[in-house]
Each structure stands twice: as C-alpha cells, then as structure tokens.
Amino acid sequence: MTPLLRLDAVDTFYGPIHILQGVSLEVQPGELVCLLGGNASGKSTTLKTILGIVQPRNGTVEFEGEDVTRRSTSDRIRRGMAIVPENRRLFAPMSVLENLQMGAYLHGGGTKEDFDRVYELFPLLHERRAQLAGTLSGGEQQMVAMGRALMAKPKLLLMDEPSMGLAPILVERSFEIIRQVHESGVAMLVVEQNANVSLSIADRGYVLSTGRLVLSGPAAELREDEDLRKAYLGR
Image (cartoon, rainbow, N blue to C red; front, side, top):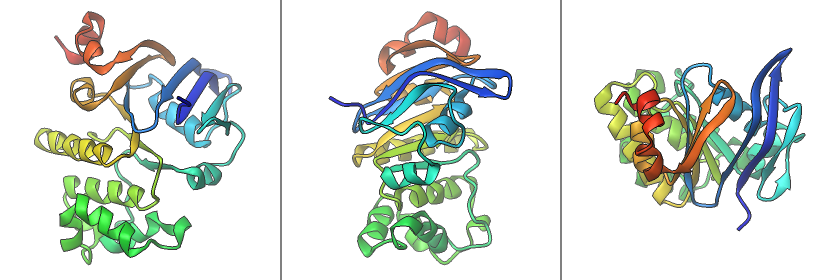
C-alpha cells in the first residue's frame, strides 16, 4: 500500500543549525500515528516540514505517492492536509460558526453536509455556534480547532500538542475526541509529549530525540518499551 504521507531521510536546518537529522516516517491511509518527544526534540519542525513551512535541505516529503518537497503550503492543504495548531489559535473575536467557515475557505465556505459532519462529532459546537470562540473553555476551543480543520475535508489531519494547556481531566476528553475523529476515517499524525495517552489510542508511534528518530513501532509495543517508559512515562 502506498503511504498517505512519507518522509524519507529528511534533513532540516534553521540557518547553520541542523534540526532534523535523517528523519524517515510514514502514515498509512486511515492510520493514527503519534510522534513523541520532549522539548526541542524536533517535533514542531517535523510538522513545519510536512506542511512546507520550512524546506528540508536533503530528503523528500511525499503525499499520496507524489513528491511535494518543493510544493507550497497552500498546495499541500489543497491536496488534503490540515492542521490543528499548538494552543489552537482560534479567531477569538469571531463566532464558532465563523471559525468553522474559515476552515472551509479553500472549499467555498463549506456545504451543509460539511457542517452536519462536524456537528455530529461535536454537538456542543452546534449549540454554541453563535458564541465568540474566545469566550469558550480550553476543551471547547479544542473542539472548535478540530472542527475547523475537519471543515477542510482533510485526508491527513496533523495535530500539534493537543494536550498543551488543558487540565488533566480535559486531556482524557481531548484524546477521546481524537479517537472519534480517527474512527470516522481520517488519517492522523499526532505530535505530543504525553506518550502514555497518545500511545493508548495510536496504531503506531515514533520517538524523536534531538532531531533523530530513536524508536518506532506499534503503539502497544512502545508502551511496554523500557527505554520509553523511563524517558517519557516516568516509570
């Protein structure tokens, strides 16, 4: 099967600083993959490289079997990538409905079916559709951010630190929502520091450390990996 997303031996630099060092990873159609690592491990740079925000010096980025390494970010979004950014980055002075419409901007603002799909996953958003996004709680804002990304009808949904800034009780709820979105048929790459909860819902995982992939494999196996437990699970 052709991977939906494939990074092959990617080297990414910020000026003279070598950030990603030979990173290779894959996401298959319909798969949920987590990319784990601590601060300054290269997780966010990996997402920026996937989206074309930064260009790798070496290696390739492929989407649906096509080399998109030199393609623009907007081109990749049109092809079917979408992101839920770190800290959600909603349009706070705009309503929930207007935020969702922004997610479908490249698709003409969204059809009734697009909205119905999002409201089915997140009934609360229908109830709050006229409320200003900036007045919602952190967990509710996470729903808006995910709904906004889904309005683009992505083939691959990228998530950057979905648990960041959420109370522990909301982290579990957030990942339950991620699981529901995945079960609706969307392939996902979830970038996280919270290894335990990420691996509990993922199919496979990768672990980054100072720009290098140091571990990879089925999520169930990584949860039992002694090195991973010591480094990320605190046990």
